[in-house]
Length: 365
Ligand code: SF4
Ligand code: SF4
Image (cartoon, rainbow, N blue to C red; front, side, top):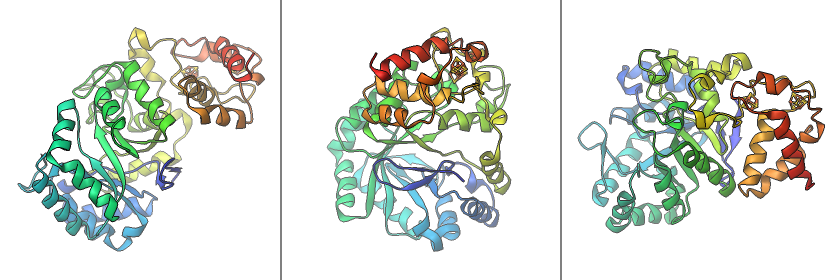
C-alpha cells in the first residue's frame, strides 16, 4: 500500500481507502472478513457515510480492536434512526446519531468529523443557524473530533464553506463523468471543478474522493454516459492524479471486491492508463494536460504529468509547487523538444511547447 501524508494534520493515509456503501449487503461474517482483509492489505482510512445502519457494527466488530491504527470519517448530518440512511439538519437528531455511531464502532473519538453533504448554500445557512456546526465545533474543542471535514458535490458551495470555517479535509465526488458534465452529481463546470483541486492543494486541504466510479456507471458500457466502460483501476488512477487528493474511497460489497481494490497497488502503468477518456472528452478539455502520463516514456526521463501539475499549481499561486518542481531530478530545463510527447498525447497537448513555457516561468526568463 502506498500512503500519502495529510498536508495539514500529518496523518499517514492509505491512497486506497474504503467507503461503506455496500458492505452491509453481505452477511456479517463475510463483511467482517472483508474489512479485516482491507486492514491487513494496508487500508487505514474509512468513510462511514453508510447507506444503512447495519454498516456500523460491522466496523466495530472488524476493527474495534485496532481502532488506534485506522482513521474514520464520521458525518454530522447522516441519520440512521430509521435504519437506512437519512439526511438531517436537526441538531438533536445529529447528536443522537453521532453517539449511536460511536457506540457501534466501539470508539469514543472521531478522526475527521464532517460537515455532511452540503450541496446548496441554504444547507450551510441552516447548518449554522440550527446549531449543528456549533455542536461539531464543540466536540472538536473537547478533543472528541480530531479534525474537521466537509462533504459536498458542489464547487460553489465548497468555496463558500471553505471560506467560512477551518476545514482540514474535503470529500468531493471525482470521476471523468462528473468532470465532463455527465451524471447526477456533475456539479460545476470543468474549470470550476479544476479550481477546487488547485484551491485545496494550495490551502493544504486534503481531498478524499467519493463516487470514483460514478456509482458504478463508468464500469459498465451500457450505463456509462460515454458508451464505453472504464476499469476500476483507471478510475482510481484518474482520481489519485488530481491535485490535493490523498485517498480514494470506493465501496466494496465483499472480500473479493476488496482484494480487487488492493491489487490496484500492483497494477502496471498500462493497466491504470486512463487516456481512454480523451475519446469522450468535451472540446473544452482538449489541449489541457490531465497529468495522465500516457505520453511516457520521455527519452530524457521527465515526469511530464508531474511537471505539468506543479506548473498549474504554481500558476494558481501555490508557493510550495515551485519548490516541489525545483526538487525534481529532471524538469522542463532538461527537455530537448524531441516531440515524442506531442505525438503520444491523446488530449492534443502541444507538450514540447508547454515545456518551454514551463521552463520560462519557473526559471523566470
Ligand atoms: S501531455 Fe498528454 S499524455 Fe502527457 S501527461 Fe499531459 S495529458 Fe497525459
Ligand atoms: S518533448 Fe521534452 S518532455 Fe516531451 S518527450 Fe521530448 S524531451 Fe520529453
